[in-house]
Length: 151
Image (cartoon, rainbow, N blue to C red):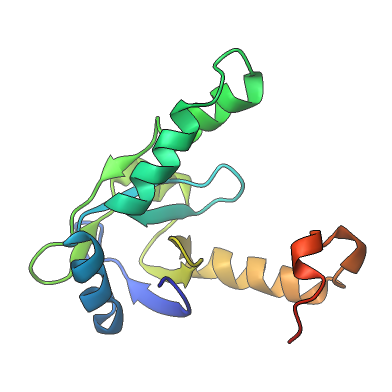
């Protein structure tokens, strides 16, 4: 569902307009109900449909709290999660603290990740993408499930 990348702009209130081609799916799947949080790995935001987020949240809540890594993940993902329903014009408000974390100014990129979108500041995304493309793929690091995949 969440695939491709789309350049988007933030308005003066910190809202993004979901590209028209994605709106219908998001409305059908989740009635436009979304959750945004920070990525624990990169300076970007993660945008989930409410249904997809609830599955992630259930998994996180089932993890043992005595484990330091799971506590950190819960703090980062759940502690920064914010409901952000799409309005009638297809816009989603990105809360200021989350925009600040991801260094998102005026121009951003919505990057599909299958079950969610990443929202990057455009300059940060371009640098990150270029860095990824400049690295040689280490095939020995691929999970076994991907070894039979061909491009």
